[in-house]
Image (cartoon, rainbow, N blue to C red; front, side):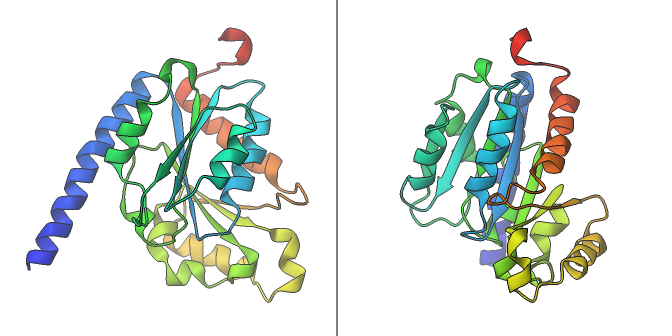
Length: 226
């Protein structure tokens, strides 16, 4: 019983802090998207593709979550966008309190879109709200098509589900229709996209969805108006 109480208190505390983060981002008119997947699914590559499309019209920043290191942050920094590396030192997810602290490293008046690249994990990140406007869950083709069944919480909460590295489908026994059906059974509102960062496939459709969500929060705002 003591363990159950501790977990409940932690989640309630995180929810309170998440609401604070959401208020801060709303006050600054910043759209935040939390990207979650297993390690190696292609989160950073996808973020780079989306930033390249967003940059002409929006000011973008990234919080890069990793247990250790800053390899991905360096890739993102080369795009000329503000990046803060969050090393969790063993924790398998980003918490709202860390998010709140990270916001202090940015000029929030000069950001329209904030990408949160969560720690590579299909379990823990789904448990913790971080003040985001949208959740994107990603599965790469080499991982297999059973991930929605095995890790339902993440996909039940996702606004967007991306099947990445789709150009590799011919090499794997991956039933994308079955996986999409598993998503629909859990979450009829989620949008499912098939992408390949290597082949530059499916990125446009995903980008249009995300931009529509951005405009829905921020209104029509472009680089010329800034």
